[in-house]
Image (cartoon, rainbow, N blue to C red; front, side, top):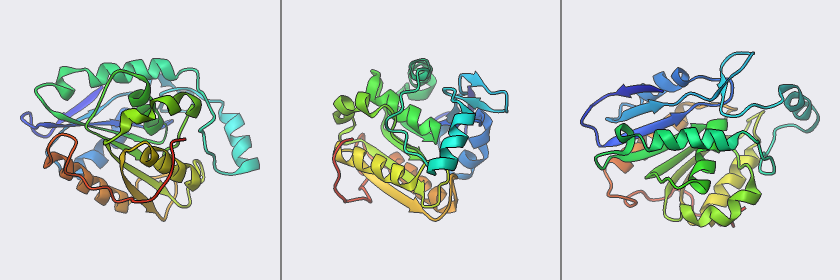
Length: 234
């Protein structure tokens, strides 16, 4: 796991999970540019891919390409990747590391794409907790397993960002993720943007604001949700 300490005395940890076919260091420049006083942790996906990069769980790339060609951008709510359990175990090890959450430090868990799916899946299905969650260009997965556990997110500050032109995970998938978490009682900050499967400048600005608000707030308070719409879990 790649670790960067901007301040050894910082009381904030930011754990960032990369997406499919990326690696731990890919998000390092983005995190450094946030300019927040925090400890940064970049876990590596469990599986090295023949095409380069890593994955938290593997997928059939040829099947994905066919589906995108035939149906367009996806919503993965009804998919149940079998390697999720091992990925969740690895993330739990990271979150329980004393360097991450020890000595009363607040923990922000952020994930891009597949990393966001893993982040949410872990908080719902494993005995771990964080102070805030950030889901960037992501989707629900295994919704049948999630439904009974969604109340665990009640009161949790969550930022959800998604591009209107995402050619991989549909914008509707992002909206449904937003509504699912809001309906569960999470305090959702919704950041739609003009763009594709990426983390553009508007998202960078909102994430910086979101993390700084958490740093200045007490436990589980002080961050006002930017999204006030309806929605129900799942």
